[in-house]
Amino acid sequence: RIFTQSGTSILMDSSLEKSSLVHFLKIQQRLLNARVRVPQVFESSLELGFVLLEDFGSTHLLDILDEENQKLYYKKAIDEIVQIQQADATGLLVYDREFLIFEMDLSIEWYLKKHLGVVLDSKAKVELQSLFGLIADDVLLQPQGVFVHRDFHSRNIMLDANGKLGVIDFQDARSGAITYDLVSLLKDCYYEIGLEAREELVLYFRDKKGLDADDKTILRWFDMMGLQRHIKILGIFTRLCYRDKKRQYLQDIPLTLRYIKEVALKYPALKALDKLLMVN
Image 1: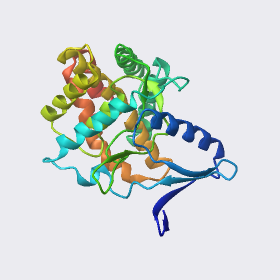
Image 2 (image 1 turned 135 degrees about the horizontal axis):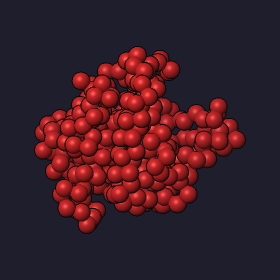
Image 3 (image 1 turned 90 degrees about the vertical axis):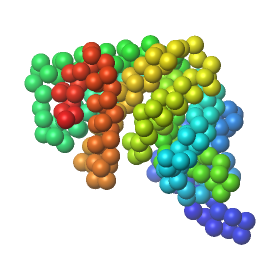
């Protein structure tokens, strides 16, 4: 953070990965064009690998959420997702079947094998990967091709002094399913809201988008997208722990497992996930 007489700004140092800066600036501009509130760029040097950005402050949405205000702020955040989905997704990497399954496979290597010490036999591995395929196929049944932030949750949404939301950490955007960012928000691995409130907000998103989907359909889209994301997160969080020495992520695994169990038990074809991923 840079302090001056006129205020503060954020200096982003990409000097060791200068090529990533070009991508960051392109994604930032796409979101700005869609009227998404992302940090303005004051100055940039591609040669040196530095960017001077607008400072949204230090208050994350997570810091202020509680049972009384969560519905208000989540609706504001959903409105922001609707804007994000107006951004140009042309040329972005696509959340295709191969990538959806690749992400879920991380759970086998890092969560089951590395964290739990479980090596699946060939039969169990085939069964689990078959379920991954079913989940991926189901995800692809919902509308695709929208701009996906990929990490739109309460730690990546800032709240400024005027109570306005700002979006950060968008550089890994892809083109994908219409409920992806909604799942990131409403099935946040760092903050849990009740099932009734969550489903009400899913329907709010549906209505805000004007989607032609009944309640059962939109909730299934949401459930399957969430299942894919949380199976992936089991692998991501344990990889962050063991490879990157960030052990704090292990504390968020129990909620992630609860999300998986909730959906696996809701749909009979997925019931075996409960056992294969050692959810209990």
